[in-house]
Image (spheres, rainbow, N blue to C red):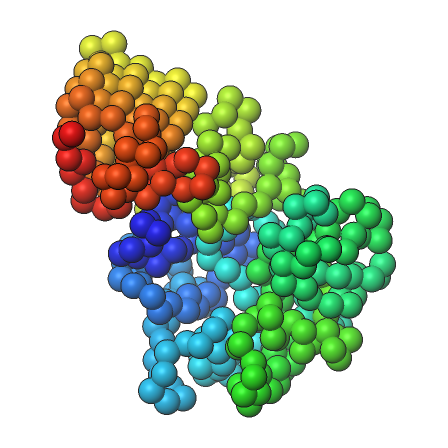
Length: 388
């Protein structure tokens, strides 16, 4: 919030021209996995519209990206959790008659050749494979943690443990779950049915389904560091960000605008696809300038100064305005002499002449704006910031 007040999280814009869901869909498409169902529920209109406009794969070759809304096939109830979402959509699995099912979240920033993980799963003969990323053990309490044996079999799945277990080959690191799974279809269907019949279950993939497989000795962890994506740089070869908080979302954008970016959007060997806006090239007039920033189509910087900022399409920055360390989404307007620092401005936000955002977070709170624990000011869609 407030970026998800009017849209599902995977539909949140990212990086100037993308939506969060574009990253996982690009990874699937680039990996040759092109029969994709997107299970939607919460405020899904903008997500559905984006998929319809952007992700039209070749139906002639049997490919598709299909949004599937909650259909209440099993009674008058919405999805009760991530596992229940798949259980209520079992017709998709049964109709496809696939040997393996890939289940991925839609709101993280990373590149991954999912085919490599699928190959490891098939070779193992196990029922479930969970993607794990190595994180410092001292920071691991913020994640769902996988306790694994030297042969990568999962011993237990721990939700934000106070004392995370180290890795057999690296005691100062732990495996954090990426929320990405590969299943053998028959085993997954059995697990989902058992979960649905369990009255105490949370119906969660990480909290219920993976422990079910683990109890049977049928789960393993896939080490993300072993995944090699064509064109990856040394810095972003194992880059993965969970952008589930405002501070993490802002930090991921700052990763993009650094001189030597943590995450390289310019990898032509593994592109991230999206629907590019139809607009003229960005324009800089009256000595307008931008440094260490991403400036997309349709933007006009007219005498203003922009630093370490991502400008989405059709943003305007007027004379003597100063914008730094910020994320400006589509159609934002920054007036003359305005100042914007460490802020996220959603679509159609207007900052009038001389108004300041992010200079005094306490003043921003008093005006009713969200200020994160890290001091990032976020203003939701269609807001015109009032003058003091």
